Image 1: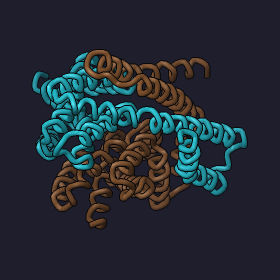
Image 2: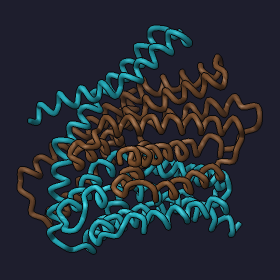
Image 3: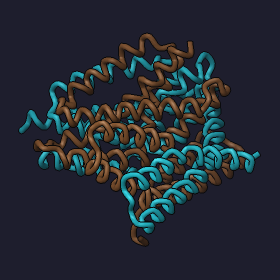
Image 4: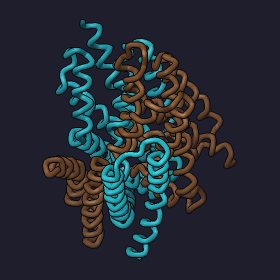
Length: 231
Length: 235
């Protein structure tokens, strides 16, 4: 436990370092921000670091165990429909709690002056990720090649983007990027590992991995669709 | 003001974690029936994660976001886009090397290629790739290039590469996109770019401010597949 904490502490320290370095260099050589801003930044960095430390610790202590338990139990007792359903619900639940998703939603809420509220954005991102995650699991069962699905997914996104109102496009693409973080990745990987371990056929490495890549296409399409509906 | 934000954030975080807790408790009651000690462990972890998320978002909202936007505005006023691109490159490079998940990924690639692509080489290529894409993102907001000019060629290249790559490499590459978009790039750089876009004349904070995370996520996808292809030829 103590050794793990030290490991997490090191991770957080390493993560916070480049930002602090970047801000220091900028402010020393190029900018002249007031002292109050620098104090604010340092205070923020301190809170972010402690918060991230506790969060990662919490994920390791309890949430990962829960992901593994759910993955193992649902495969033992469930049929394909209930597996897909549980995957969907779990996908939505972990995505709405992902820090990156929260931060994107805050920024969007601020910039649009609340017109695209953070609750709506988080909801759409969560639900669309859940749908695509269930779909990605279904793909493993059906044994369709990952490459083809990804290629089709990317092509659909490109085509879709031409019909989306221009100011939704950057947010949509960012939504795909932020869904993958310290909360979603371990959960989704543990489900994927569970599913491949019960497959009758010999599974390739390509089966388990790539889940995240496919699932994160969902929010891109989801936000684009929201843009079309908003118009 | 700073304290009132804390209450709002606490409410939002509780709301965000409720689905997971409800799901877990239902699952426990209906399917699993694990011992109480296990339930307690999960709930303790959730409590820790909630406290962490509250502090994290509080720090982001009262510290990172306002300062990053202020810095963005000051950087825009400097009107030195190439400096901005250079610093962006440096930042992307450092942030990637410092990300523990990236090291895990590089080890994975070494194994997936049966040792043909050494871990260190992958790390160098990946960091340079992310640096390059952050620099491009800074260039985009400074010069006002539409996001399409960068994303579209990137996506099309990714699709083409899929058809020439081995399944293992495709999977690792697309998961790698996840690895570099950690909480730091998202929290600070996103707000910084939004700040730059808001303070530069002729830029729209929505149109030009977002999109950087998407660009950064493309960098590892392309670098892993290109490296894979290159080394496959050599085999």
